Image (cartoon, rainbow, N blue to C red; front, side, top):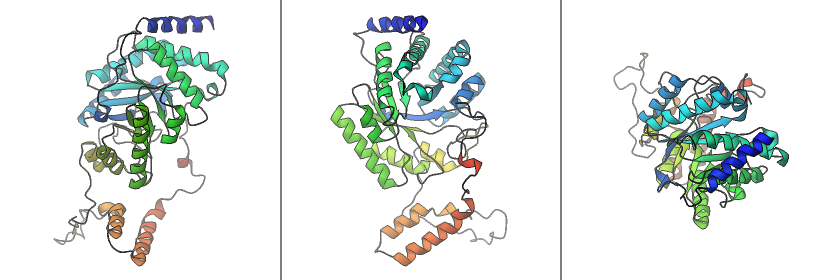
Length: 375
């Protein structure tokens, strides 16, 4: 405990020498085009650091640059940190430098043992963890550091702990802006704006309307607090907010964003992710959306005619898949006309028939975290 006290005190004293420095909040965070990152083969963020591969990091950051992405949010697990602190620090520095060399800013996001937030007696341990990370990156004078994310998705229950940790980072590092990645706009308001430099929230809404409402609500709150705002988690293939829909709405709104996530991983690969380790993609529509090109869902779409030249009987049968005319477009077209319940019922039956074979039964292991996950 004496070591912990000395380390925290030393970092706080370092921070006090930079009282006059101005916090380096980007002038326009709407330009952020970010991604959350975990290496493809690993199961969870702790495992990524325990099996850290510098060449893999450099390859994946090259992929990110090809997609014109400019920020990365990466999780720092306390379990991996305590297993081998020297290796953890070395790997973290490599990660920050590899990103900076490619024009990608880094947002370290801290992960703590669950029990810490409920017991203030453990908070000095969290303070010391933060202090060591600040010492590693800031005192190491690494220019790739863009933000600190003091706590991920604290919810209402952990808001006091999140506020405390945001305050710790702001004391230790007088230059780098601090945020807390909140699950919802309401959680963001619970944490409050007084302890952060930039507000951030997550959005996995199921409809365009809800996405739009969340953006409006978040912007209203940010305006009343006089703080910039961004979204640090969007995008999924397993909910009704596909990447191209979420990215289109956030691009229209002029709000900076981070997708979850760049790589198709052993942890969340069944529901999230853009790229496989070899650089191939699961869905070119996601890549197109990242580059600012979105699917046409309007009435002027020219329907595909796979059998125009009699090729339906061949293997190369064009877009003979369910999503060549996506449900979102068909529903939008119905909305543009008078109420038509028979047509709506027919669509529901059609989509149900398509989706039912893919429904996972209760208790299926794919519904839970994969085996081998390290907390």
